[in-house]
Amino acid sequence: MRPPKINLLDPRTGVASSRRRFSFWKGALIGMAALVAIVPVLFSVASVRLLSAASAINPSGGSGEKVSIIEQVRRLVGNSEKRLRGEERDRVNILVLGEGGEGHDGPHLTDTIFFVTFKPSTSQVGILSLPRDLWIPLPDGGQAKINSINANAEKAAARSGGEAARQAISAVVDQPIDYYVRVDFSAFKTLIDDVGGVTVNIERTFTDFAYPTDDALYKKVHFEKGWQTMDGETALEYVRSRHGNAGEGSDFMRSRRQQKVMLALKEKLVSFDTLLNPSRVASVLETLQSHVISDMELWEIVKLAKAMRSVDASKLTHRVLDDSPQGPLYASTITVSNGDAYVLLPRKSDWSEIRRITSRILETHQDPAAVADVSRPARVEIQNGTQQSGLAKKTQDLLTKVGYDIVRIGNAQDRTRERTIVYDLTNGSLPEELQTLKNILGAEVGLTLPGYLSSGVTPTNIALSNGQQPASAGADFLVVLGQNASN
Figure 1 (cartoon, rainbow, N blue to C red):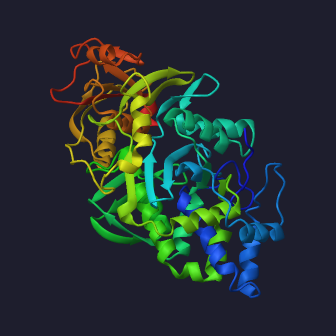
Figure 2 (tube, rainbow, N blue to C red):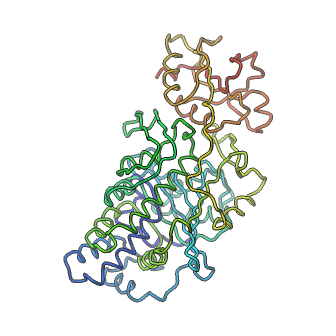
Figure 3 (cartoon, rainbow, N blue to C red):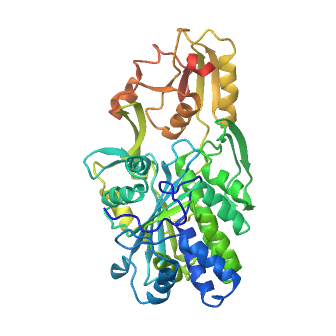
């Protein structure tokens, strides 16, 4: 296992050690800015700031030793002819990991995962979003959700998560991964503010009534269709929203929004006068000191950034792996040590389709703003399985805000329920809506007998028929509230 080389700035806690997540473009383009600025202003006060900020990156050699600021400059100047990993095959592959960082639940869970490939000969770039619930094999023979690999490695050894994720994901997609970059939430937010915001075309109006706040509560966020310039906080809400209505309440739609903001940030960094302003470059580098970790040396960041300067939107291709009818994945539930887990599995019995998509990502001609048709809201019946009056109405108000269509509320036959159960009456056809219900209500999941037989999973409860667990005709989900819903 190769030790990480560059902790893109300061004490990289884990792999993107603080808060907000995002993108490979950050580190790469900023490194380019550093090179552009160093030479003409080497003796200026601004250059001292820039070099000081760059030294916090601390690129290291194979021995893992930190490299002095003088050595960094020497490498920047002396490696113009040295090749990046992957250049010999004309494909430089980068794994981009976004994590919450310290102060968040599951700080090292990488809920943003991009496989980015760059073809130097044509300046083409392809971006593949890997969903966080993808259940994949591990090099040691085990299995895990893809977003937990980094976190599990960090528990064993600090700053080892990027390498662990690289090895596991490289094996799944059957592509060499030359570099990894891990970024946290706060870097994403602050960087956008540093460059004056990003402008994004919002494809449709949507509202998320269950956006999580730092104090474990919820708030409402709303976005109107059309072009909008976002500051760091707004952009973060836009890419993190998971419970939006109007068809935006899925991880797949969130991945599309993340790609759009990443590209908008890339354009801002390239066109912004940052590139010719060493003071701005230093500010951006200082922003990232504690929030980015990578195994790229500074000269590699600079060289890659210079090579990618000419990339334009017409040479960018995008793909999100999803479980749509035409997609390569399907949703299921598996039993793990702490209960049942919602996962995504390859529709075929192996990973051949995902590997084909990855290898041909540069041949994909998909509009990054393409959005699926808005479907009808999921229909839910709510039954109060407790003696607490008004609980069904309270739950109805909550789910209506999130975007569900409540077809009926009433009392359950059994009023002694301890735990809330969501019965899936769709035979697994609305996995994202089911997962949202489970998350918001803290519920267990039950399936009807046909769903159980077709899914091959063992749910918490099985309803042998709608007669045993009666639900209104046309309901997609039946929620039977337990005592935990009143907490």
